[in-house]
Each structure stands twice: as C-alpha cells, then as structure tokens.
Amino acid sequence: MRSKHLAEHGVLLLIWGGLLVLFGVLSENFLTAGTLSALVNRIPALTVVAAGMTLVLITGGIDLSVGSVLGLGGAVLGVAMVDWHWSLLPAAGLCILVALLAGSLNGLISVGLRIPPFIVTLGMLEMVRGLAYLSTRSQTKYIGTAVEGPSSSIPRLGVSAAFLIALALILVGQAVLARTVFGRKLVAIGTNEEAVRLAGINPRTPKILTFVLLGLFTGLAAVFYTSRLGSSDPNAGVGLELSAISAAVIGGTSLLGGRGSVVSSFLGVLIIATLEAGLAQVGASEPLKRIVTGLVIIIAVVLDAWRHYLTGRQYTLFRRMFST
Image (cartoon, rainbow, N blue to C red):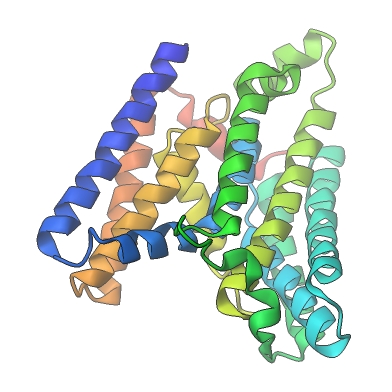
C-alpha cells in the first residue's frame, strides 16, 4: 500500500514538474525566485481547506459551504479588528471559532439527522454568506498591516509563516490518516459504512469529526486569506469549495469515498495553482483559463472512474447526495 501511494505521489510530482517546465519555456519570467515565492505564498488557504475536504470526501461526504464559511470568518475577523479594535490573535481566534461552529452544524445535522450533506451544506452556503454580508453591511473592511503578519515572507526563506503552518498541517493530517485508528476508521467508513456498523463501530462520531475539522481548517484559511489581502471582503471564498474538491480529486481522492491522501491533495493544490499562475503569465484570457482548468478536473474524474473499472459504484455518489 505504501509503495502504491509513493507511486501516486511520484506521478503527481511529475505532472507538477512538467507544468513548471512547460510554463518556464513559454515565459522566461516564470521560473524565477520571485514568481515561485509568490506561487507558494498564495496557496495556504486552499491547502488547509483541501486537507480538511479530503477527510470529508474519504468518508463519502461532501461540504459545499467552505467558501461561504471562509467569507464569514474573514468578515468576523475584519469587524473584530476594525470596528471593535481587537488585536490579531483574539480576532483570529473568534474567526476560527465561528468557522468551527459552522462545520460542527454541518456534521451534526447531516450525520446526526441522516440528511444528505450535499443538501445541508448547500443550505449552509447560502446562510453563512448572508451572515457575512450582514456582519459587514456588505462592505469591505480594510485592516492594513495589522493583519499581514502571517502572510508576509520570512527573510531568507522566501515563504510565509502561513505556508509553513499549512505544510505542517498537511504532514500531521497525512500521519493521522495513515497511522492512526481514527484514520483507518475514515477509510473503512467510506469503503463500506454498513460493514463498519456491523463490526460494532459507530460511524457517526468519526464522520461528524471530519466536518468539525474542516470547519476548523476553514477558519484558519480565513485568517490566511484575510492576512494576504490586508482586508476582509464578504465576497471572499466564492468558488473555494470547487477548488478544494478539485485539488482533492486531482490528487486521487475518490468522490465515492474510501480512498484519499492529504499529501496527494496538497500536490493537487500545487498543480492547480501552477496551472493558473502559468496561464496568467503567458497571457491567457480568463475564459481560456477556466476552460483549461475545468478540462484538467474532468480528466481527473474520468481517470478516477476508470480506476474503478467503470463498475456500478459510480452511481453510489448520486445515492449519497440525494438519499437519506
């Protein structure tokens, strides 16, 4: 199993390396220290959300609300620092707590009441976005240098503290998934939840915890995102859920549950970020960037279906989305 994961990581690294070489040839300014430093310092928010999303997807769940939860968390952070004159640490703590509560509600409602998470998180997406608008009165909160610390490059390293924290969470998340009883339970639940239940294990608690962890990671992502912009925008995070799911799928996480890797999802984030940055540097239009990125995602999903030998398992996805 370990050799299989190493092979998958190797393939993803080759794809990422191929993109670096391709855009390095197409643009002479792409393979420079400044460009690569900007690239890695843009991805901490997506990285931590993709890590949490991977855990949810492995159990067969899904969360469509993370983009809006990030927007609400950032809005709360902005209000706390601008209107209430809080310092960064307590404001960041409040931001993370709000996102944690949203994730906990997603888990308790969808798992506890056996309502499809697709429906629950779709409703949460709308509700928390509305709360973000209400809390900021639909206005951007300009915070400035007081919030920029986590996303500022560390001298001589060229990377930010936010990136190092995100990288540490990837390593811890992979260790939890691969080397703990909790991680093995998540994989077993995604593979065959009924078999887990018959073995005397309650699958509800681990599934709820994945949503809680995703909420926690999304709150941290909101801090990173707001820190990088220097302001909090109630529209922040639009489409983040699609990017996080895409990164996980490109990294080999199955939408059917039962298979995934946090490290592979991180490599998926690198592939998406490199693709977007490279297309921007070569002057690709916004529609073309969307077409190419969407094509890459479709190819990843098709390959995932092929890995399942196109059996009837693909229909499980729709049953999990729309059935109790």
